[in-house]
Image (cartoon, rainbow, N blue to C red):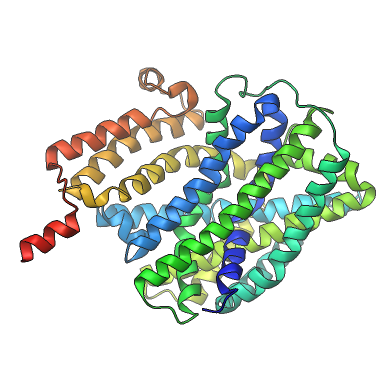
Amino acid sequence: MKKFDTLFIGFMLFSMFFGAGNLIFPPMLGALSGTSYWLAMAGFVLTAVGLPLAVLIAVSLVKGGAEALASRVHPTFSTIFMAVVYLSIGPFLAIPRNASVAFEMGVLPLAPESLNKTVALLVYSAAFFLIVYLTALNHEKMEKYMGRWITPVLLVSIVALCTAGFVKLGGNFTAPTGGYEKGAFFKGFLEGYNTMDALAALAFGIVILTAVKQRGISNEKQLTRYTVKAAVVAGALLALIYVSIGYVGGQMGADGSFATGTELLTATSAFLFGKSGPALLGLIFTLACFTTVVGLTVACGQYFSNLIPKLSYKAVLSMVSIVGFILSNMGLAQILKVSVPFLVTAYPLTIVLITLSFFHRFFKNPRRVYGTAMLFTGVFAAISGLSTFGLNLGPILALRNALPFASAGMDWVVPALVGTLLGMAMGGKNPTPASQSSKLKAS
């Protein structure tokens, strides 16, 4: 690979991760956490940056990628889990969410009040998904389009916004509100779920590996090394931007109360740049949302065309674009309402799966360990998800609330540990790495 290829692939990965949620949630965290900002941001960065990096590293270390990793639980689990992940971060949640946010932030602030929003969204989303489709068709050139062209423009725009905020905003942080009064770290930890980046990392692994292979790299160790390097570049950029935007949001929060992150950013850009502020913010949101939707569309196309050979890559792109177009016209509020319960359910399973993967070689019977750990985690994660959706679970919910860390939204931790230990007890634990053990038996 050439000297700067890894850097540009890292830029491409950053642009794929950095979408609507990555812009909306950090400034709101800053405004609400106030004087507990650094503690809350530490928790946010752990799940919004650290966890996606861990997922990419774990996926790169397993031959066969995320599907092989999930197969350690069971092949059927792998198929169902990965299909649900791709559909959720793809056409059913993340893709329409990004398209809706791009419209609300890139078009509405600049449009006349007389604009028919329903018709405008229909026309905008049709054009948006047509361009996404055409770009995704040429996925071999994604690193060129997104890594070398779009990402630098996006970064310069964000730097301009944050720099102006550092210079012009001098407000002190206010007292924590909105759940950050106690347990700010855990509150920030849970907010990091909303970026959906840990789930996206399961899908993006195949895209990054493909980009590296296109540079003539086939050796497994080299593939892992270059993937990790690109992931570190993307992670460093994400962390820096989260901290910067969150800090600006914290200072802006001292000047008033805001209902959403989009409202806060709109007010911030107008205060810092006057009438040109909404245009700058619209550019940032449009580029960020577009690159993320392209990345997710390509990932879905590659996965489902491999999973179902009768479906061509082009056919999957068409279906993803059409479904994304339809759902994006439902409105952002409805999309976000559905996404939160799903994330509360899916993230604990992802965290446990990735954590176990780093200790895999020490398990004598890995499938039993993975199976019991994921079963125990999944039961309580599902309870939390159903509760978040608004279902009254009565005594079941009372049982969940009695668990350690339940008040911090981490009720699944103890069940995950119990499931892991039970699986190890049932299958035994081998202090010798499994790979070494098999070599000893062979000899």
